[in-house]
Image 1: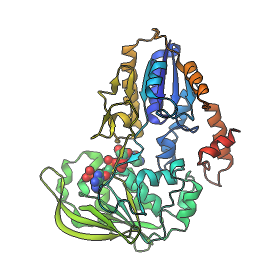
Image 2: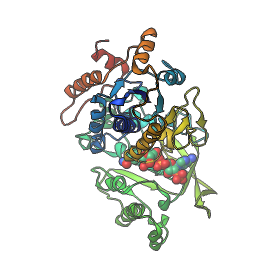
Image 3: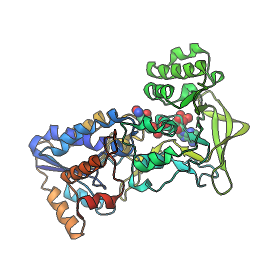
Image 4: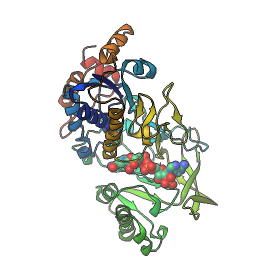
Length: 436
Ligand code: NAP
């Protein structure tokens, strides 16, 4: 018998658990440990609430958690309640699947002013993450800037641009819906330091901006290279650029009250305001031969009371685990950090790729684990029983997958009409439902 601990219950953790159950059959026991009683990580807290079809993947994860070989161990924080070294003593392999929930910093003056928030915070706020329930992003101004040209920037801009009933069917959390209902926002500027060809936005997500009820995309055709230059692009990327060109060609729909303005070749240099963010100062850029943005010296201001920085994420450090500072992830070689210690998902690769990217990633690491400790072998480890004993000594009460089902039932029962659930946001609310 082998015992494995997977830390983190997002896509990377669950795909790895699935792969291990397939590789080992009944010759392994797998504990999926999460700091919260609610599972799914990025699926619950990251994926946009109006992208329910993406969230449906959690049904596949349920089959793993409800199977004989895997158990969900919620309410346990690794690095605080139990150390990684202690876990390594209890399990044959420890697999870190904690994602990359921290915002990268711009490193410009004024970044700490009220009104400047990272996308992890903003996304966490509208998705019901307990750490960001009290964020209260200022929506009383008419202008917002979203910095970055990736899909997360698009998510943030779209959520800010939607009308109340465009959230029907979503699981946006009640406090965010209420705040957005009384939002004064009219102009959302998406600030990119490079040009349209350098965006990391995908066609489906970009296309959605063309179908918003009260908002219209604004793109300047002068930002594009000659159309022949698109031929060299990879087909998916070309499709994104074509959508942007269409937005530029059609021009903004004057009947719509809100605008989503694409401001390309604009590098943030500082944020200014009297006690709160009022404007973002950007420098006009040109691309050098390597494709990097270099400043021209010309600056101008983008008015904004709310500035969402959406420039990528990093993995938190855990004591005793080697860290790759440049990559913002655990130092690893193909997922292996050290003997019996692995990383998967964003904690392994850095914050890129879709949910599906985590599947081959998890399977590859499971293969490595199976090669190092073949199914049928025994490592003599205490596994979950040992963890239960250790947690008991420390007065920590873990939660199970059945506990999550109880929370989920309460969330479904509390749903407003048309919504699949009303998420409970705070740890104490989850524990109250469990009678703790
Ligand atoms: P991303 O795709 O890596 O985009 C980050 C953006 O930030 C880039 O445009 C980058 O510009 C910009 N940036 C970085 N440093 C900057 C700086 N100092 N100043 C100005 N701009 C800066 O990251 P993401 O949007 O956080 O998305 C993470 C991953 O999740 C991606 O793989 C994404 O596709 C995926 N995702 C998918 C979906 C979906 O499928 N619906 C939704 C959300 C996220 P440069 O290119 O110039 O560096």
